[in-house]
Image (cartoon, rainbow, N blue to C red; front, side, top):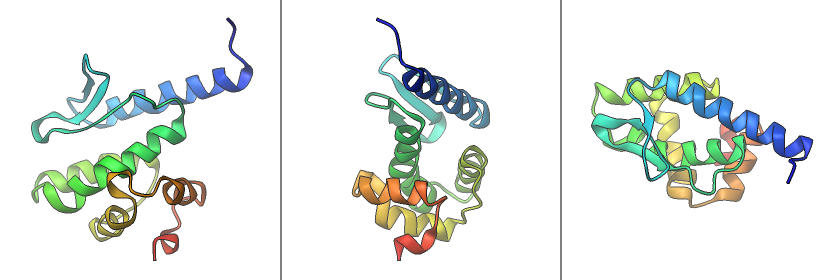
Length: 128
């Protein structure tokens, strides 16, 4: 079974962003359960199951990293994880932005809005 050009492009883009994440988040890895552990000491991770595109990966980043950055990580870890998050997505979110993102997109509560947010190049006014 051969892949279409679009499927191949999706696969390359997904492998690229995962590789970049593994580079930007120190000590990150993918475990035997297909979870990407981005910050092992604080157990910041999400499942890569059903992640088939770069957009899927970005949606998971917002769904599962916004809470730890906004609420759970201490003053040492939150800025470090946020910095890697921002580098990966080429954004400049603040911790306050992450509170808003968590409130509207966290825990995967609104996938449609998450996709709109990403496709808008992260227009925070969509979350008002």
